[in-house]
Image (tube, rainbow, N blue to C red; front, side, top):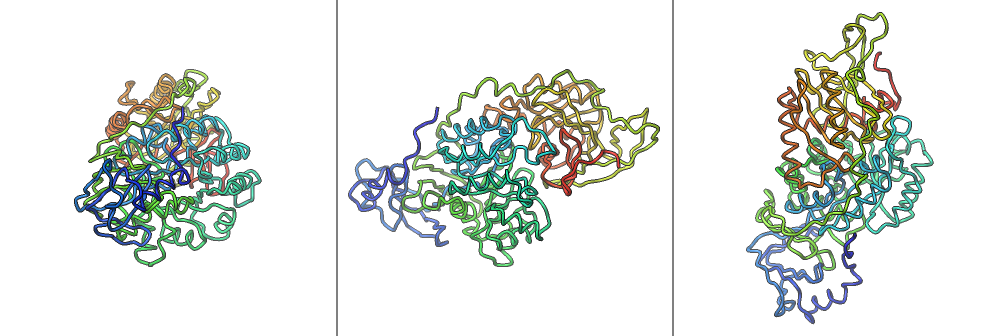
Length: 599
């Protein structure tokens, strides 16, 4: 069930005008503060704010004419009033939480607007999964706008998903009330080569007057990049260098700078503004992927904002990147992103513009959090039972399913190895000489080479693709399995022992999805994610505690990477270079071709 939609400006305009003119009383007036105006980039000391029906009616030096007998007057005590924070690009499923629990986790951090791309669940459940996410998003006390996923599969011909998204699906979704645009166009080779399906999706979005999200995950800024921009994407969050941000902004795109749990791409790009002095209007801050532990312990967009300031950004400029710039990009400048008449009354009271303690949070005129404590309910959807039963292995897996057979008669082989890069989405395409024992290639912990397997889990084919990975540092007889496997979300198993890999994979079949770590025949930790094998509807603190135990178990097995699980979950992401694994084999993402394990 969807709650009553938030009243539109036309519905509330008579009341807003009456309050601003002094003919009617406001519901709430905030006095004694300093309003941060992101339109003019100034601090207006002593300005007051009047709110009615969830919107700002008056913002000015004296709101006394808006106060009546029933008006709640709040004294800000000299604190700053800043707009509620907007996340310009993110995936709720990466928090391993449902929209309701994600909202409950981030509201106390001051996030009042999110632009979400549920392409993870789209890969598992198709358009139906997107609709479920959309419907729960509309039920929340903050604004969650959904981008219709564009690419399932993300790389046609290189992976098999549970469902495919079609241009007809995109056209239908554009009629839904909470859809704000098209999700990141990950199939950038398809756009560059004018693939009719990709162009049809972009055309349907533009015909609806909505925004097309971008994803150009390549360092080449030559003709291929220019062809991609000409194809219609309006923003991009895949930049990692200053020249990436500059190139995107020069072409009329918004450069989205992300700080997620494992992506640290703000520091290297924000210098385009802080050092080169370029116009900051086309720069937006976002998270992309945030783990539940990050949300509970470190924050959300307030964390990104603080980081941008620490990287040298003027606090008011950084604040624009997390509010008005984002709202303007999605055509919502008159609706949110600033403390100005007519906008949704989303604001934060904070005593320090650099440290950004989030002391009080208001969304749609209602106080929703105070000093880290959530004050409102975040309603849950009644998720269908079959959505909790999406792990189909087809059989009980054994150690033999994880055998890497060497070419007949070989004593050693030259093998391709996926190289994990800490804190970055790209991997390295490595080659290593591997010894052959009894006709098999096995992991080599002395050289930090483990086995990786992609287990098909959507159709129960029993298919397993085996390869090698380096960078986790695992030791002993262990295995980590996960049904969070961007973007196709089959099952990724990384281990040093075939028997443990089989145990871990079968355990996820029992759990209905999630993450599990095994060592020497025993489960050390697990995170149950029964909804589509991606999310839990338990509170964020509970999921974060389970994830923290998993992280500790990974460290106990020798892994010292920052947010190592995020790296694990991206090993099947066949649209980010250089080397990935899919249900169809190893994929060279620099050439978008399948390659053999052995060179």
